Image (cartoon, rainbow, N blue to C red):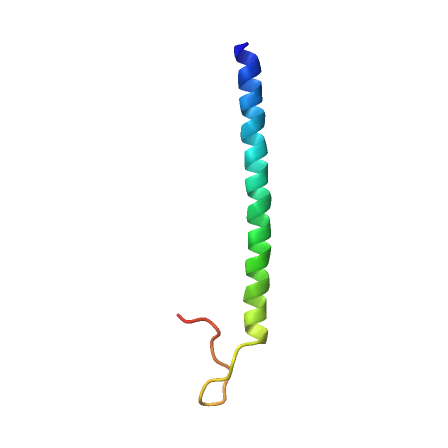
Amino acid sequence: MVPLILVLLLALILFGAGFALKALWWIAVIVLVVWLLGFVVRSADSGGRKGRWYRW
């Protein structure tokens, strides 16, 4: 009975880790796209130069 519970627990942990890693990959791809779009659509500052699109 204990080995069955351990196997089911291990399967649950691996499934959860796999789902979390897949979600993190999608988040990383979205952040990369937003970051790249920021270079394309950044606005010009008062001097006419291209400014930073982020605040810091």
